[in-house]
Length: 116
Length: 114
Image (cartoon, rainbow over all chains, first blue to last red):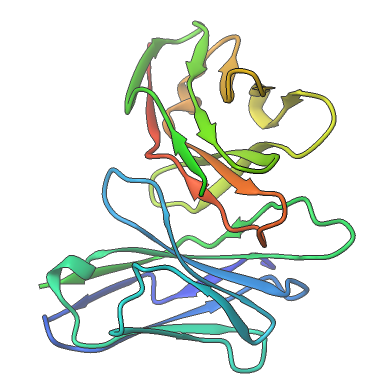
């Protein structure tokens, strides 16, 4: 399978703990995005990378959140000192920017976080 | 800044009936417009997209959408609903020069009655 993969698919944690999610994009894609989706809502943009550079961060990304893409391939999203309000589905997407760029994002199946 | 409004968080149709899901957008530059579908426990899947050119775009599973600049709309239609169309549908916009950051609407859950 050469799609976007995310791990873990589901994480249950206690309030105050740290969690980390991993995303492996489609191999030839140079852009990687993180979105958050809460129940009954559309996905909300968190941040995106072009190669290893983090180019944009949403105001939703508080200082408890950090994202990295150290080698321009996979990415991690860490949430420190989790709060119940962090409970959501965290979606990763990737795309290719270049001559044939049509703006389409390819999404993974998401990592669902439940904070007790 | 860009935004998307999807009118109707829930739409119910009978099998075989017309499907119409509404989407209005705002964008300060020529937009790229998308419809994604999300089935339970699955990732978002692209149905169709408008970037430039023909304003009536056809997608997978018999869906199509028309870009109407004067109405700032990009409504999704399908002539005849099938039970397998039951899912959540999201309209999204990106500004064509903005690095593919999509802004999504709140979604419309489509229910299909037998």
